[in-house]
Amino acid sequence: MERTQVAIIGGGPAGMLLSHMLHLDGIDSVVLERQTRDHVLKRIRAGVLEYGTVKLLREVGLGERMEREGHAHDGTWIAWENRRPFLIDTKRHTGKQMWSFGQTAITEELYRVRARDGGRVIDDVRQVTLHDLTGERPWIGFERNDKTQRLECEFVAGCDGHHGVSRNGIPKERLRTFERAYPFGWLGIMSETPPLGDIMYAQHSRGFALASQRNPMLSRYYIQCDLATDPDEWPDERFWEELKLRFPPDIAHKIVTGPSVEKSIAPLRSFVSEPMSYGRLFLAGDSAHIVPPTGAKGLNLAVSDVYYLHRALIAQIKRSDGRYLERYSETALRRVWNAERLSWQLTQLLHVFPDDDDFTRRVRLDEFDYLQSSTAAQAALAEQYVGLPFE
Ligand code: RFL
Ligand code: PHB
Image 1 (cartoon, helix red, strand yellow):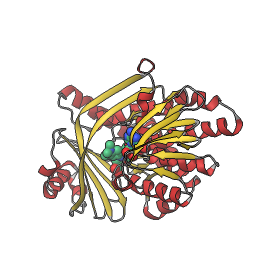
Image 2 (cartoon, helix red, strand yellow):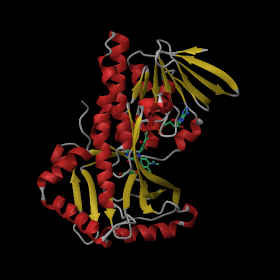
Image 3 (tube, protein in one colour):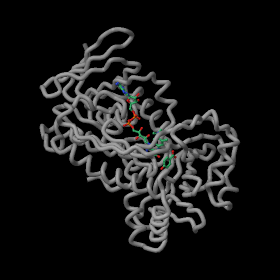
Image 4 (cartoon, helix red, strand yellow):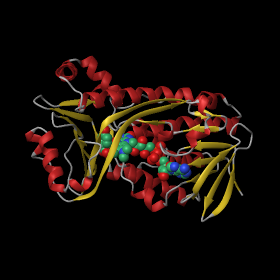
């Protein structure tokens, strides 16, 4: 039997960042992760960080590699078929920049600093179960190497992503879920080629595309695809050809192609489960909410949840002040819903839907033209894209 102050389920960015931040305040935690460390460190996901995420990572001592390998942007471009490209100019409207830096690198850094500081991260665990969440002493049951184990704690942080078990710790009759599935996915590739200078979404009648990056020799590109798409039917040649068709020709010809080092499909989904807490269980990150990646909000929301949860746990554990914990769910959800709406709105604006008719297409075009012409609309989008400030 092990004991800790905060049991953290899930060793993705939310769980590991929480563990690191608690450690900086002298609070002990144990992270339980279902996958092996190798698997976790190989996953390729997010790449664009909000200003608030960058600031927080710097404040907790994780800025060095981000400064070295990442890259600041004044915003993100939207290249629209047969229109002048438009910059979501976060620098101009908010004074803040976005940052290209990969979730894979952030996760590596988090595992590095937890190992350096003697953090307990138990990987490859099975059969995680949550118990006594409304009592004083919750505990977690799990199996490792076919041995059943028990972890006792004061608080449980459910950071185990969309397919985790923590959300089920909240009784069904208390949970309310909101969901939207989109009838397409993103086929993404990573290639060791120099990226375009900017991050760029492309709206095109053939479907959405995105040019992004991780570092000066690592590019990330996506194209909207059918949900039934088999990546094996998309050899690199075919991917590059389709990608270039979706960007305006003067931009397409600047795309440097090369062999892909990874290729995968992600479905698009919006999902929120409320509340984000029950007794001594607190959900953070994808375990409570999912956004479609248009808008680049998922990882950033995981970070803001952790910011609020860390503050609340510190107030409770160090000062017996439970007010932040009581309000954790409603505080976090305000930011979550803003990101949900923005991600949904950008997804509607930039993708081709199977049931699009002429009216929908014309209204979408008007939304883009309005953005091009209205400073107020540009400022509103920029403020949300760069991320609302933490409360
Ligand atoms: P994660 O990263 O899913 O980590 C959860 C961890 O929990 C483990 N786990 C369990 N552990 C123990 N017991 C169980 N029963 C468990 N079940 C699961 C899992 O193995 C895993 O290690 O959730 P977390 O930490 O909340 O982090 C969320 C982010 O990963 C996610 O929101 C982003 O990647 C979303 N996202 C993006 N977000 C951004 O902010 N900017 C972006 O540019 C961006 N691009 C993206 C994205 C997600 C994408 N995909 C693949 C869905 C691009 C893509 C293509
Ligand atoms: C990425 O770089 O992977 C990325 C960038 C912008 C998005 C989503 C993903 O909106």
